[in-house]
Length: 247
Ligand SMILES: Nc1ncnc2c1ncn2[C@@H]1O[C@H](COP(=O)(O)OP(=O)(O)OP(=O)(O)O)[C@@H](O)[C@H]1O
Ligand SMILES: [Mg+2]
Image 1 (tube, rainbow, N blue to C red):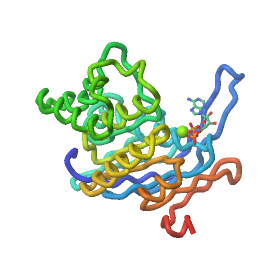
Image 2 (cartoon, rainbow, N blue to C red):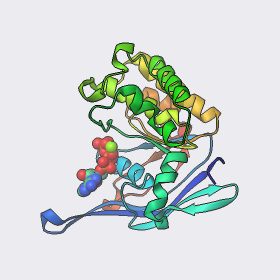
Image 3 (cartoon, rainbow, N blue to C red):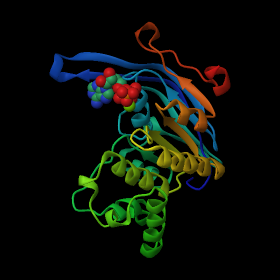
Image 4 (cartoon, helix red, strand yellow):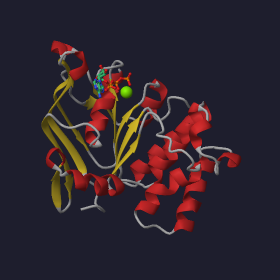
């Protein structure tokens, strides 16, 4: 079930954080969130800082557990229920189906930038030369100076690290991509490159759920907006056409 173009459905999703270090304080972050994401579209999450946008992406990536609700991936030949997916199955799902560009690069000491980028392809058993070539092509496209390719990204600037992160996220051409503010620390030239990468991913049928604070980028990549709000101390959420939301 890995080579099809999945549709993602989320229904009745709840998320609560229990802070044991704060006397068992409970924070309601998400209540009854539902959405559908189709192949070839980019749905953009909107809402104030702290509303739960990154939390949703982390739940979809299996980094945060799902307290209540359903997350399903529908393939041509079957459906995967993510809330009941056994822990061992997440590795293969992330390798083959769900890509994630996190807000910040998780730097691994001593691993060169080009190796960080090509690693998702090697994990699938790709030829090393081919993987390296594709990683270099992406890094060049994202204007990362060639002198940095063989260096570990720990000392890179924020924008340089983010470009390594973006290259790593897009190289695998996952059918479902989660994008957490991928353009936040980029200059206009590199923002345009990321917008082009998103357009190419759509054209090959990838489904994307993204967070973009930059309204110009949002307008250029969003097919629909999903506004999250604070009503009732949790949030009501619904989808609308981007045109309608932006007007
Ligand atoms: N692991 C965690 N433990 C406790 N609280 C958390 C955890 N992760 C997130 N939160 C809380 O959940 C809320 C939502 O956080 P989240 O990072 O999803 O917000 P966001 O909408 O992505 O904000 P921003 O636009 O600033 O990135 C915040 O109040 C945050 O403090
Ligand atoms: Mg966030």
